[in-house]
Image (tube, rainbow, N blue to C red; front, side):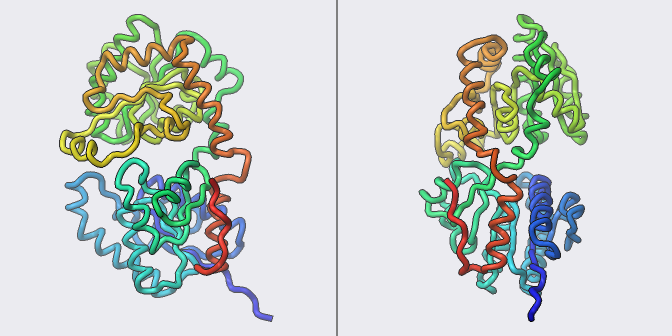
Amino acid sequence: MQVARPLKVFIVAGEESGDQLGGALMESLAAAAPGIAFRGVGGRRMGAAGLASLYPMEDLTAIGIAAVVSKLPTILRRLKETVEAVLADPPDVLVLVDAPDFTHRVAARVRARNPHIPIVKYVSPTVWVWRPGRAPAMRPYVDALLALLPFEPEVHRRLGGPPTFYVGHPLLERLGELRPEGQDATRRAGAPPVVLVLPGSRRREIVRLGADFGAALAEVGGRVPMELVLPTLPRLEALVRETIASWPLKPRIVTTEAEKLAAFRTARAALAASGTVTLELALSGVPHVAAYRIGWLEAQIGRRVLKGTTVILSNLVAGENVVPEFLQEYCTVPALVGALEKLLADTPERARQVEAFARFDDIFGILGPSPSSRAAEVVLRLAREGRTGALPGPEA
């Protein structure tokens, strides 16, 4: 009797968020398929799950044009090394996590040289906002796309993208840490209200939004006493302190994950840079105002290629523009003041956001398996059945 050999998975992540996703996926795969073997590229979380990375994941991380140009020789070398490692010992499935500029090139090269290896892409590019042509472009080399957001399978079906399976956002596995109970719920309803200040997780975001955020909060705080809390990363703390030095009303800065989660559980409202944090706020039940500002050239390009009526994740999931967003020249102090003040009192604007966010549990389907377990199910089906095997039907 022939004994089935352990499955082999090659998995690649190129940035911190991908490392977190990849690590959780590896843990779910190991639980579902004991003896499974991993190779690839990842960071600390994937290392803790059993991956010996081929090279430091940081070699693939570059933000901004200057950084990309300076690291291009390294990135190209790592691209070749990654493809050669996959082909030298073909895995049962290749899983590529986020980092589309790098991982899509890996997928295309592997598919061209060994079309039998099933390829899974974990995290959809934002084709619903810009460059929708990326959806059909993925189809020749992606056998299954794992989507974090519930509307993405329909977007890819409409655009002609690869088979897309909604597995859920990793934040769904942390709802217990984000939502208030007991004393936290009492504090959220108490006075003075806790207001989160979230100017972004990148240096340029903090620099571009800092002055307007500080002026708007000072004006609101002059009329409504508030307790301001600004969660940030330890590496950005010095920049944040420099930014708020001139603010008339200074927030309390917190840098640990536990402090951040505590602030989310007690906050009544938030002023935030557009990004994943708006989804985090919505799942926490915190009404918020979103803003963003980019460089002039980027803005001119964006106006020509961006699609849709909103770029705010909480609005996209809700299916309506419940969160006010102020982008570019519309990001002004009076606009931020007017929108934030309406969220601190019992107003129709606040009630509309609270009611929309209450629907998120049904929209995301949080009562089912965890996102990493759903993702593991698709990966294992492809690993066992191959490219020609039957996959479960994409979820709407």
